[in-house]
Image 1 (tube, rainbow, N blue to C red):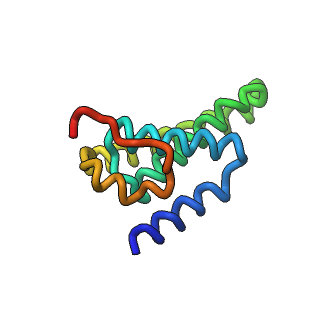
Image 2 (cartoon, helix red, strand yellow):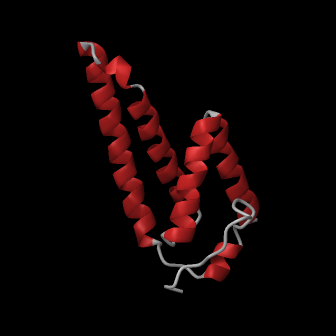
Amino acid sequence: MAEVFDREVAKKFLNELSPSEQYYFLNRVNEAIYKNGYIPDEDLFYYCYFLTLKERLRAITSYRTEGYLRYIYAEGLKEVEDSIKLYKEKIDRKRNISCREIAQFSYLFSSKQCKSKRY
């Protein structure tokens, strides 16, 4: 049941992103799970999604030159950074799981292995 839920959650995020953003998103998720030891759940997906949105905002730097657009950019960036901070705190509370628990979610990242020395 959890596998189906997580697969559906991942699809929801990927459907809203461009192909290059999907690549960035999946790299952030992969790094968070296998390198940093976070639990692959909806909070982690939201954290990586907001990191991807921040990258999207960074990519539109040419639109930040005019006054009103600069204001919209700054407010949008502030909201995204606040969301990143919120979800970072949530996933930090759930950190440090075993490689066996990570293996349950290997359907997302079949080519990687848990190589962390902490486990």
